[in-house]
Image 1 (spheres, rainbow, N blue to C red):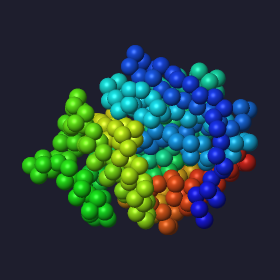
Image 2 (spheres, rainbow, N blue to C red):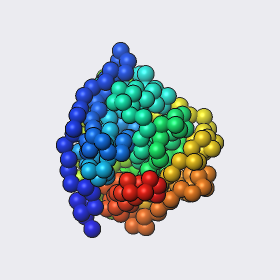
Image 3 (cartoon, rainbow, N blue to C red):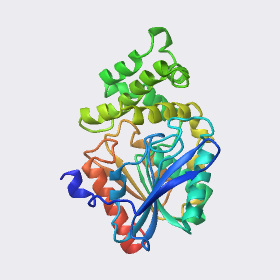
Length: 319
């Protein structure tokens, strides 16, 4: 089974445009599929990863009207990598601004990794605007999850972690997040660019069950690395601007919504225990653990489960 066998064929946007959400930030957005189809919102990961043409392909274009956008500081939104005026609350406001602009009353919310975090935070803030949630690679923003990303991944990807930590002088490796943040927030491209590349390569090297050098190389491209490096460190440092345990504590607000969770059994970016924790707080959710997958939504087993979820929702209105 290949990715192209699993996903829907490539489609072009129906509409695209830019949305000024502040005096600083300008967002890129697009829609695809059937204009009278089921509204769906695609929230990308990272933070800072941005959307791609493949992001459109998890939905039947004959049955869905899909809205995709690059969050503040990501992808084609500008300024790239900007951390000022960039918080979870503001991203939620951006989603509502986009929904109102497009005249959508309610939509299916689809997000993976950081996109799962933002999906939960948005749905808990605006449950009346959600038809349901399709989530992948759960990240709940606990201290343990952040520490695992910074340190624990080395148990599975030791050389990749050594390259990540080795970008810093030995004297600064006691606090990787602080040391990287200083460099990533520098005004000097000679300082922040190599730091962003090192941070982003580390993530890109660990996404798949089987190593994928092409993904690692793609993550060092400046258009990707700057968004991922700066924004991930920014959101890590601020615990995603959420209270401790906020997403689990607020599950009562969305327990009535149909939900689907898919998670790779060998996901080392976002360990599978957090998918189980979310499922335990969400009676009736459909939890699918893919036994031969890591973190990436482009692994065929994960992609197949996501497509199955959107197909089932289009058919039955539930999972």
